[in-house]
Amino acid sequence: MTTPGATSRLPTLIIIVAGSLLLMLLLAFGAHWRLRQRAREAADVVVAETRERTAAAQRVVRPSHLDTPVPGTLAEALGPLVPELITLRDAEPTPSQEVDAVCADVRNGVRPVSELPRECREALDRGRPLMQRALRASRTEVGGLPEGLRILDDPRHPSQRTLLLPFLHILKLAALETRSQTARGEADAALETCLDGLALARDLSYGNALIGAMVSATGHKTLFFPCAEALDQASPTRRQQARLALRRIRAGMAPLSTALRDERVYMPLYQAGAMFDQEQLDALPAGARALAFHASAQNPDATGILARELLLQSWPLVHEYIGQALPLMDLPRDQRAPRLAALASTITSSWNPFLYENNDGYEKFATRVDNQRAQLDLLLALALVKQQRQESGTWPSEPPTLYPGQEVLLPTALKLQPGEGGKLVLYPEDMEPETLSVTATPDAAEG
Image 1 (cartoon, one colour):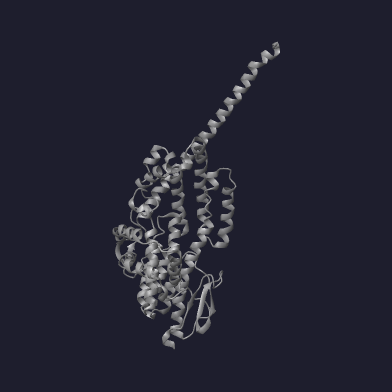
Image 2 (cartoon, helix red, strand yellow; image 1 turned 120 degrees about the vertical axis):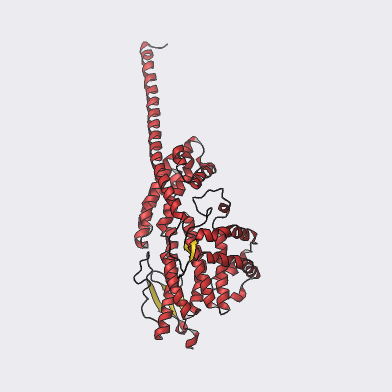
């Protein structure tokens, strides 16, 4: 039997429950509205930054490594070769792990050229004509990669299938060619091959976010030992020309913050571009607009109401996070690393999986670029100490001044160490010689 008091309280309970539900709905709607508003404002910034980054990638002003550069742009010189480069890489047989390891040992000077496996020797013979044409393209007055090879280009472009991988193949061939030329006593020609390769690898970083910066660093690492060997054995005249070229290549290296500027627009477009308003999509360059639709359609993690809400909350924060990392990327390691670690902790501690999965650990990328700069600085220092020995008959007692009257980003502090047989070892002062170094040898004429 229901009491009159219980009956009178029922409408009140219903009102309280209904009111609570309504309040929760209003709060949820308000939270969603705030997320949408913040995302809309962030998307406006992304659109503006995308237009700026797209324009910057199309024409890159950087010093040519030659006194008399080839007129025109890298895109004009390299563009016609790209289909051939892709075909060459696609047709190349995949060597066994054992063969690949021996070929790498030859490139890195661990083994002599005489031990180069037949497979890699034949690959060099097949690829040499195209490799030489691609290397010569690096001599242009203006940089900038051809359409389809930049990260904000239309993902449906034929070149997007392989992106920069064909160039890594070319740079491996260039390293083997440099070693082979040096072994034949053609160190001056080897040095020319090496410098063209370094210049081409440098240019690959522009317009390609962090992936381009890492491909560029890998290319320089591949060429480092062959270049050092050729530089050590080249003629004094050719070494003098190489000093100028190395300084120009170093000055033309894109700061890592430039790559992160590309990353700051690529990640939102890739993850959430389809969530932009139509007028924002219409304002994007054509390639970036295609990227926004294509990448988002291929992203299975962004389907479902909950996933879309999580993404709506996360991507503007990722965009903001990258913006906070930008001014840190070009600092010295001791200043950069702790600040990047503190910044990353705000992402990794998030409850949103789209946030902590986007923590790319930027310090590891910065360290690789530190090493890339150090490699160029070591090559330049090698040329300078060889010059001093030629002029004075002795090795210097102090590291040479690398860039007198010239500003470059984070020049490497070097140390010298006498080696066996009258040699001189040069290495970064914050590393051990076994980690990264070059060795200068007395010229054969001295004996």
